[in-house]
Image 1 (cartoon, rainbow, N blue to C red):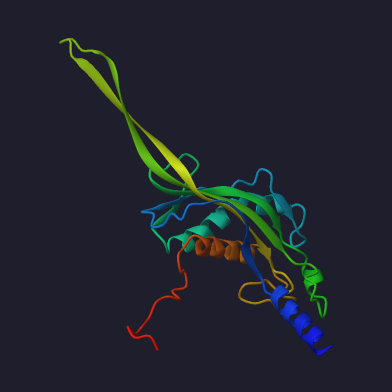
Image 2: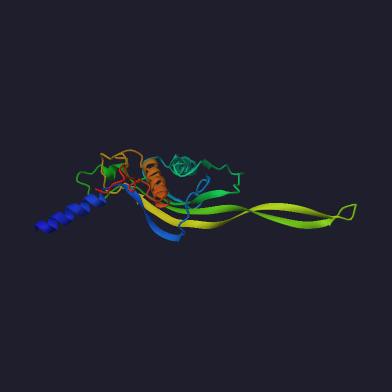
Length: 225
């Protein structure tokens, strides 16, 4: 009985922590050290945008702002790796890493559900599911011969096109879990959950593609003790 109670408490503790994890990976090449990072605001064309924090009339506004909000969070996290910027619609990078994807699910949850006393089952919890694709771009130069000039010499034209290889492609998933009405620095409590979930997702993306993101391998002494 004692062991069963301990197992239940441990499970409740783990499930109560808000956060986001990598739920599925399609491509992982081990690429590191980009010179620059460009973020294209993620697509929301087919996003399931749910939750009861805002009125139905305001949801279209929150939906339209979601790509810019998440892109700003990603920029702040990924610029820990290399200089990062958010692209405008008419901008196309020619080198560095291009980060793009789509927001599959953005669910703000229900504050009323999170307010229930003793809520260890995550009633009213929020959820995000985000698909991420990172492409390592490079400039490909092609020289073609057009025609002869007036002196009979061949004329050449060089075109540059940006090509690339997908180096990471994966999904992240998570939310407020069973953090309840009081929340934490990673959970909203009774507030609006989406900014917390976006920040948690951006941080997890940074951690997923960074070797030793927390510097656990750094030593202050050359001697092993």
